[in-house]
Amino acid sequence: MTKKIRGKAIFWGIVASLSMAGFYAAIMFLTMGAREVWDNFSFYWYLILGIIIGFGVQIGLWVYLKKISRIKGSGALPGASGAASGTAMLACCAHHVADVLPILGLSGAAIILAQYQKPFLALGLAINLLGIAYMVFLLKKHARC
Image (cartoon, rainbow, N blue to C red; front, side, top):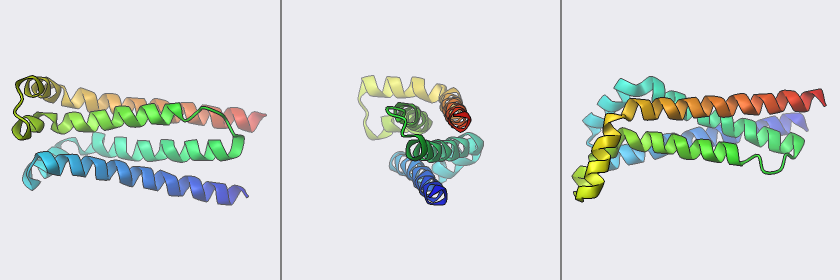
């Protein structure tokens, strides 16, 4: 039974990582050209991959915990982390939204977001790491019981 649960957790972790990568790629390609997407990714690859992989690990751990311990309501943490990670990914290319939607209020906000691109990505990664640490804590706590 545990192998089946572990397999499901790995499957959903991979699905979550691929979904986050697809989200990133879709947003980037909708707001930039292929060359700019590659330049942006090559500059921040370590943060972007960390967020993508961290989100998948977190979702995999959440699925495993849900199946093993039946903890109620623990889905808020990966959900919040996913929202923060998605926001961090959007911050990568927010300044290009101004090219697509030249609305003064949005372009001003996008310029501000673009200036803080690296801190937003680092924050998304930190939130993922905190979420993983919390899930590991819950797993260890469950193992002691």
